[in-house]
Picture 1 (tube, rainbow, N blue to C red):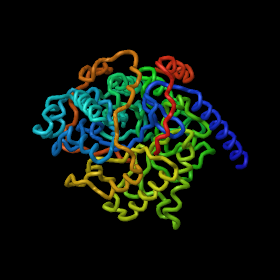
Picture 2: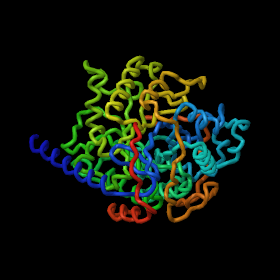
Picture 3: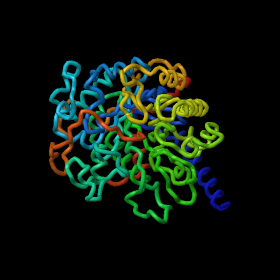
Length: 476
């Protein structure tokens, strides 16, 4: 045990020194992450006051609640509440389905006339352009390989699961990278499109990398997969940030596997097997939830909630500010769910922890009320839940209102068609168009090969018209 502790400490110290050197000396195009902060293409610090708005990832393949609200009005409402960033989950079906969205789910045509007859991709095109026009930063999240449920991995090789895929075939790692590159290029001309979350909540058979003697299939290793995805995305659009989620355990004898953890929450192996992704493009994005969503053993401990901070620190907080840590999902019903006030205590404690750490960027789950275990910022009558908003405003700390980036990101190369183009990337076979129709969605609960990262960083540096301007001293 002592040998393991010493090895871990040495590895962590080496990792920290390398990361600091890279953070000081590396310059990259577009949006960047450095020393726990995020910056736009002009070198101005930005604070993400984020919310997730799902639906493009579910059977309806469009934003939720268009049967009772207008899609432009939804974006405007989120902005009016103080949000300046939206995390948008999508799936391969979003890109390949040819069924109009109003045939997948009832859409109020009087409020959403522009979407009638549009494919999911055309609807996403319109949505992205409108969010950008309204000044909302957008994080596109590859949420699952399937619109039907959250899948363990970013690929599907088991024939028994081919029915989950849009064309009833295997979905390969090359398909995954292809689709990530497609959206990276397609929306490259939108200044507020700032990042891609490469896969949502890898779990089950997934391991960070080697170490578990019971899981030696390298296809399930998260570290090389995300490195290859990041290389492909940044080669296509060097302006973007790469959001990477954690795993549920590497079981390698080094990490602490006795900590209860959510899907996407565990980054412990980053301390001794760090990701080979340019550090000023990498954002660690843990997901964490309270007792309304997933009941951890730590929630019943006699020292709850005082015991929570140590777990958060071990799982992901230790990497701030060497890395920028942005929680990508957190939330709950905040007193209106099965755990009652216990979820209120949990969410309050999490905000206290983030403030203590100086982490003011996050994405709350979610906007609409029909996420079964967490609810939304809106209640069932579509009224704003002010208790949740008060909590988020405390986290945000009275930051100034969102403004457009002062300097547009460096244009990505190669040039791509305008977002209103409706030609999807060529799938392995044509989509069948036989997607399941649903009037409502069940949300996911949480809610080409690798390139040399140093070469990639050098290429990104080379395309810059100038070095990043001196950082301002904008307060969190």
